[in-house]
Length: 76
Length: 272
Image 1 (cartoon, one colour):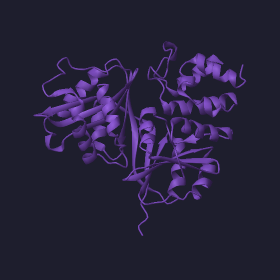
Image 2 (cartoon, one colour):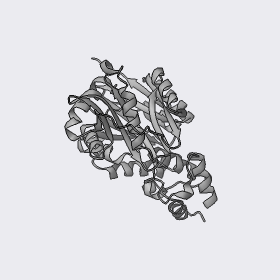
Image 3 (cartoon, helix red, strand yellow):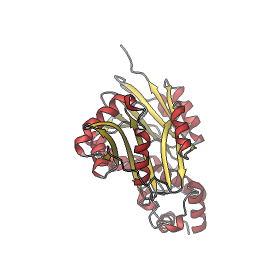
Image 4 (spheres, helix red, strand yellow):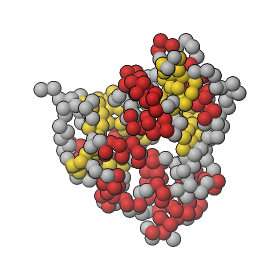
């Protein structure tokens, strides 16, 4: 799951090394537009529909937070 | 049409559309401070038609339209049922990559006309700045400059396509030292407004008074801007497609055009 997430992030913003950041939002690597695209990519890749209440920047601020969100949606 | 009273209301609208679990498209990208100001000023409304939620920002000048929908087909269907009380012009910004072309067509076939278009330019890498960047006349803006900057924005920028900031946003940027000015005898002859988010630097507005454009004020401001963003790794801004001179200038500074588009569509107000 981790590799898939990193691959999605790299495709979204190839100019950044996401392994160097603990907070993609605060570090300016993802903005609100990227978050919407990321939600759509995660939905498609993992065959889920992330709950609308979870579409908050903080849930996409690190690979760990994204993993937690996916687990909440039944992805192991 | 219901008035939005909090950011949580917006989150609830997103939740509603995502609950359909059919897809998610939008041109509404939450900016906490800006949208809080709009809500506080009682400018934001929403209505649901089918699987689409329309958000409207009503100002005395014009109405901005936003959508949150499950997909292009449902947006098209919902749009046919949208009845905006058109006492002002209605503007929509359709923002995204190539995937938005069909969304643009939907609005064009619903009475909107293409007003203008922009695209995003970016530059990847550290910014070099000259050692003598801080010259007399250049400074960070102070709160007393706010009125003058607002006046210049309202005079020289297009309010349909350039998203002129509110006084509250200007004050916030001034307080966080994100407005640079060039002054002669207290008159602002040029300014740059930028936003710094970690490694990303957004150039929002870059202006030089037309009657002083032979003094290289733009370059002086830009050098100061580069110093301010010296630790960033990506620099971004939107430029009007029609502004060929500016695009050339930006390319000279190392910026490249991205495949990120913003189509500004307009529905003129209904004249009785």
